[in-house]
Amino acid sequence: MDINVLKCLAQTNLLMRDVNIVIYKGNEPLEVIQTKDRYSDVIQRHASLLLSQTTNCGYIIVSSLMAYGIVRDKDTDYSILFGPYNVLGMVSETALRDYIVKENVDLNLADKIKDFISGLPMMTIGAFFQALSALDAAVNHEIPYIKAPNGKDGLFKPTFDDVYADNQDEIPSTPKTPAYSFEEEKRMMECIRSGNFKGLFLFYGKRDRMNYSSAPEALREHKNRCFALLSLVNHSAMEGGLDPSTAYLLQDIYMKRIEEARSIPDTDTMQGEMIKDYCTRISSINFLSTDNPVINRAMACINEHLREKLTGDIIGEYLHISPSYLSARFKKKTGLDLPSYINQQKITEAKRLLAYTDKPLADISNYLSFSSQSYFQNIFKKVTGTTPKQYRAENNKHFI
Image (cartoon, rainbow, N blue to C red):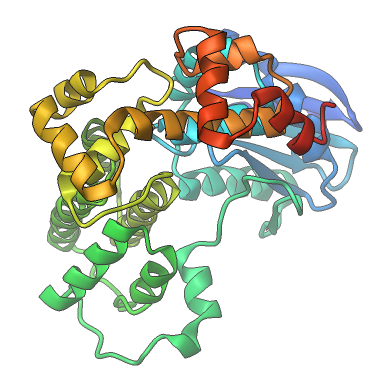
């Protein structure tokens, strides 16, 4: 296909209008046909992984945050690379810290990276695959086979339908109904509250797979059900420890996406992504869950603000709870006072940075808001029984 036709196909795909688009010839960039100043060079960083794929249509998702796609012209050595999209929506601190460790980026750029990802065009996984498939169909006149590079950390996890197909024998047969019963809702909310991803998959696989009416009033009714479910899911996630500010922002994002859905199958897909997203966030929060919602919220708050200076007064202010009441309840429920727990969580994050990056101790200390490097080293030894330098020597095999 002529390169000018390729450029036209890429530029007229409405789902690609706000991202970088680069034409490659073989393994070399030939022409940047659309660029955004905020992220003009990010495609090149991941081009080799995209170009290593053997199929005409492929993608990568970096640290579960940013999606990139590739469509290769089967008749020439031209390829169209495009991205990135924000596929996570609300960028949590947990996801950001994971990205920083996995990509070994400058710790001083953490806030800028969060702003950068949050400012990317937002797109669901389903819409991203739609853009990818449409471009491949236009370029190669075929039904696309989308393939991700094997072994790359952070690739998109299977959909609910994929897991349903793989686990049909484990799912008990139940009568199909168009809505969840009260008992089913209770079981699903408990899965979300506890971050039980496997249980949620098996439960969600039992949902109705009937053919829905295409009438406008049916779509409105289905959207209203999704809104009601979103409210329940959001509340359960906060009970499970999701930071309320994150939960409410996430709720706003999904309300907008549900309202924008154009068909009942689209809202059904959005509902699955929504439930999975909340459950994944709960399961990824690194704290010991308790049966006390207040303590869970405090732990989630510490996790979400781990890079900041934290005290009982600050956490109490975040949660609108008396600091003295919070401290007393926290110690009674966990056996740890708040300062000890905060230091424990900060040192856990420091251990990851020491083991998997080459960041200097001063940068790690500053990143986690310790008052000084010497104080950081003292706390580290108190918590782990060894110094940061010794821990890195014993556990970091990449940079020593």
